[in-house]
Amino acid sequence: MIDAIELPQPLSVAGPAERDRPVRVLLVEDEPAHVRIAQRAFESREPSPFQLLTASTVASARDAIAASKPDLVIADVILPDGRGIDLIPSMDARSYGVVIMTAQGDEATAVEALKRGALDYVVKSADSLVGLPEVAQRAIRVWEHIEARRTAEERLREEEGRLTAVLAAIPDLIFIVSRTGRFMDCRGGKRLFGADAAAEYVGRHLPDVVGADSLPALRASIDEVLATQEIRDVVFEMMHRGERRFVEARVAPYSEENVVAILHDVTDRHLISSRMTTLSEREREVLRMVAGGASNKQIAARLDLSIKTVEAHRSRLMKKLGAKNMAELMQLAMTVKEDL
Image (cartoon, rainbow, N blue to C red; front, side, top):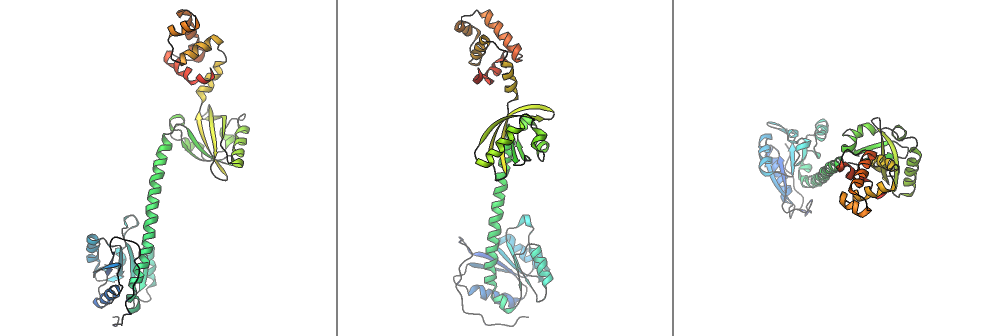
């Protein structure tokens, strides 16, 4: 039993944060004399930033929490139907902070309370009961920081989730590559490189993936980007699941020791370009007009050829470029349009 004490003169204190309502504090204490001391202490703060609610058991405290949604719970550790520690919510369901009041010499309980998520603990005495408003202010400040950090972390996770979804939908492959040539991360490229591209590349090094003829130019580009902090473009050959691929890479600075490389698969264009060397000048002219959407009749009139000759040119173009039909030929023509 704590003896009655004389309260200090009323002290005006600022609220813990700008709010449109008082801070709701639920005091869970089964000793009426202790409750009265705490009530007088909170009432002595003018204007009071707090609304003090009280409960005397764990059960009544749970009812009060559900009904009033307090910002802070200050609970005695020993209550008639349980322990105040049981009012500490789980990490994933926290909507209020908790301060535990312990008896003198009960450090083990205080440590347990802090481990379970209590904001603070108070060794119960006459002075500490009078000082509960200051304890509440400190605890609310801590709680607001925790809530702000949790909100920021949730937003960050949401943003990361959206970014991950966007990157997964990008057909290009995105690498983070270190100065030493180690693949640090891999995103995107699902449509062209498969859903498990990251597992295939992360942790490997450039010589494991990049063709020997292309490796010096790629290493030089990485070194240059890190030295100048400027973007560079490079074309190189790489192996993907035993298959040779040709890619265009835009290499940009990512950090002091890493670059980000966005890889666009140009294997088809590379193969077509190599086949383009077998085309005659007339076949190139016909292919250029095919890329422009011209019909056989239009090509014949423009090049002063018969329609049969145009059809013969188209047939040879399909054979040389590996097109199975006219639709594929037009698609191939569009792919190499800039090279015609």
